Image (cartoon, rainbow, N blue to C red; front, top):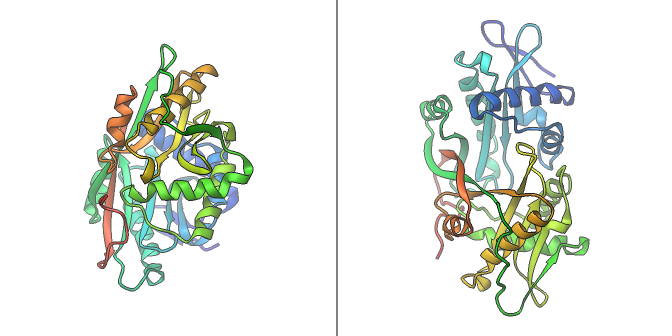
Length: 335
């Protein structure tokens, strides 16, 4: 482990596993100041730390005070084909305004530039960051670093005072929960459905499937009984992969992925899956359900969720910076 002295009593170094509790404490202090809630658990962060492809020594840095307190952290994430990467920074609210966030943003960008050579030679390479739409300091920092806002994403929720409508299934569709032998087919269906999601990048199957399995099966609230599959014979036509509890809001279930494959769209299947999920959670005594969605969804998902009775609770804005010009391999439109 190498440590570098920065300025005014701050040092920077790679994080170690022993730092995890302090990093989680920092992230929650930042979230509490920005949005009024804590949103990271030790289980959540440990799942990220141990995820395939993540290397803390290379992909992250922490800033500490002279007495060893962790006051800022940056994480970077890049995966094959290395054309669209992410960085996110957390700074303890007591240490904002001292240049720590700007330093770590520049460090993260420098780290991701090292991986440009791994991308296809003619591909455009970008890095994305983001912030809660109401938190101006982070937006200002990103703009000053040369990032431009490119998208917004909503958290939408519903609170059910009565049982939701019964699902109306298209002809030939049956509904089942995922079984262990279906994991590969489910991943392939998710990947196929989300090819029309803005920013999607095709990834090698082996890497993508391993990463998906890791994040799903190590989720602290993983329950395959609420991984709902809409089947047309032996084909997965659509799916709603849910978790019965959320770290930030323990009384809320979460629809992590809702996707319909192209041949089965515009038949009411997505709304039926939502109603089915809502109904199951209501039966379990869970009256609040949330999900995340692209505010300008290419497939019209936002309007669908509004039709189902969901409302926007929170908005995050995504910012982008081009690291190398070239052919854009990410999904931007739907044909």
